[in-house]
Structures are given as structure tokens and as C-alpha cells.
Length: 208
Image (tube, rainbow, N blue to C red; front, top):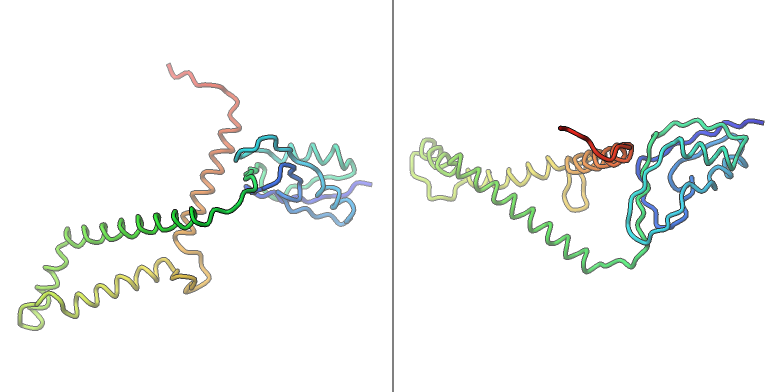
């Protein structure tokens, strides 16, 4: 008797073992639990390399393997048509190296942001504007540190925190931060490029 099996593939899945099964890269549902279990146990790929590498596949490969191992299954794909297996061999975490990289990135970001803010302030002559505003309103010359400079500094920090929606482990709301959105877009573009490059069968293009 034919059983309909719904398969929802993830676009990219990170694995740490060499034998990759369907349950590792997709959600599988079937009204018949036995058929669903057999489909989940279908081996999608065996990785022979010990190095980090990404492997591309498609729903056609998955359907073929399911048909070979579970003939009574009728596959209905409700997810991605192409997928990526990101193989990362198991290794001992290097916490010292991770902390060093984190500190380095933080220093680079802090220095870059500080430099950008300072160059903007100089280009726009913000300090001269503050001095002129203070003279017009208060009727006397600014000594260089007034309520304007203080409010600007505090407001700049608060504005950055509100915009990025993130401070330490706290989030102002449940929306993803702009950085998370950009990182997701970057990851999606990489995945699409890998899949499209893998689909190109030609070895070269003659533009002459």
C-alpha cells in the first residue's frame, strides 16, 4: 500500500558524523509511523574526507534513495529543492583561540566605529555648531563641555543600542537585530551561490 511521506529539507545543515541520514537534514512526516521511521533511517550520503567541506544535493537524490529503500513511500517535498551538507569533523573546542578572535573582532569594530564617528563630526563641524548654538542661546562663549556635547554623546550611545536592539544579553524586543538580518542575508547568498555553482556543468565559458 502506498504511503505519502512529507519531506521538508533544510537549505543547509551542519553535521559532525560521516554517515548522514535523512533525519539529519530534513523533517519527515507520514501517517504510518513505521514508514516514517524507515524513511528517516535512509542514508543520504557517506562522507569519506576528514576535512571540513560542503556537499550539495537535491530533492531528486533524496527521492531516488527513498524509492530504493522504501518502495511503498510516495514522497511529497514541502521544503527546499536543493540542500547543502556542511561537514564539520568533531574536534576539541579551543576556547582560548575563540576568545582571542572575539576580542580582536570587538577591537576592530570599536576602532572602526569610533573613527567613522570622529571623521563625520569633523566633516560636519559638529563642535563648531554646538559652540555657535550655545553662544546664541546662552549669550556667552562655550568652554567646550556643555549640555549639548553631553546630550549628544549620551544620545549617540542610546541610539546605537536602540537601533541594534541588543545590549549584552538583553534585547529590547523579540525582533531580530539588523546584524542578525544582514548575517542571514549573507548566509542565504552564500548558499544560493554554492548551489548554483554546483549546478553548472560546463567546465569553462568562451567569451572570445
